[in-house]
Image (cartoon, rainbow, N blue to C red; front, side, top):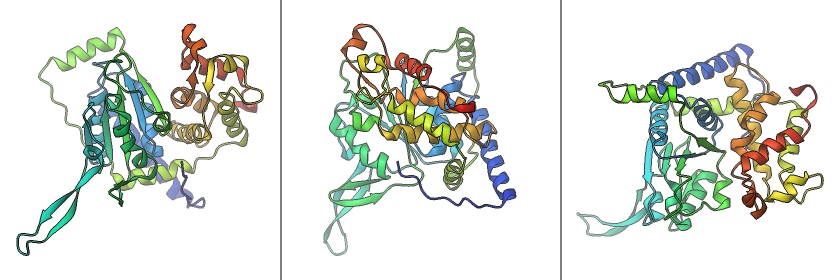
Length: 344
């Protein structure tokens, strides 16, 4: 992921004001979202981290866990253009990117090609049940997710900025689904797992959704400010020892790397690329700033390592036969790799 150059010398008063605004906007977003969504603190944090670093998020959750409602509500608080695509087996790439049509000028009678934009031309794209469409259609998102652009019939079109893909998938239904290609999975910053709520929170949901209660969510920021936040996050410093720790964790996921632990060699076919290390550092910077800290700490890295790595580690049949999943591998990995000196 390309990291834009940012100014490193700013007036301290201006910088403090930008940081305070970042924290106020984040808190305001969470306050408004919690008027609609109960619980799911970790999931909301990861989605906001993805937005503040300019990454995409894959949300894996069971039916009825409010995945779509959560994304729509967050989009409303951000004041961005929200588009939704319901992925189905018959969806075509042109249904996502848009297509050229022939239009006739009523005065001259001449015909010309006119590009009609698809739903990809928005700021937040909800790709609902993305694994229900074939890989050919899924791949229509690849260029958009990496380059923030799309190509139709040889013509190159820039997408609005900022641009985020928040995709959902159901982990339990396999019939009529198509696993996402590894190249596309690697473009997601996070694979966020949205689980069932606690009994106490489910009571709150029932109470909120079975009464005459209408919640009005208002925008608290805009596209220009979000782009400024993305630049601000990249200015958060990280110690060299913490950066080396991130690289060591990512390299340890590769079974053919010298020093890879035995459980990686036994259970893993392919590990994570350097993009995982980039994403962990970026996400940790956003998390640190959200917690009123101005440097990346060890806890920021360990808190976000699982959602960054879980879709980048491909397990083999040994892991499947012993019922070991990627989250278990990541837990063992974090316990295995020595923490950085001082843990900060």
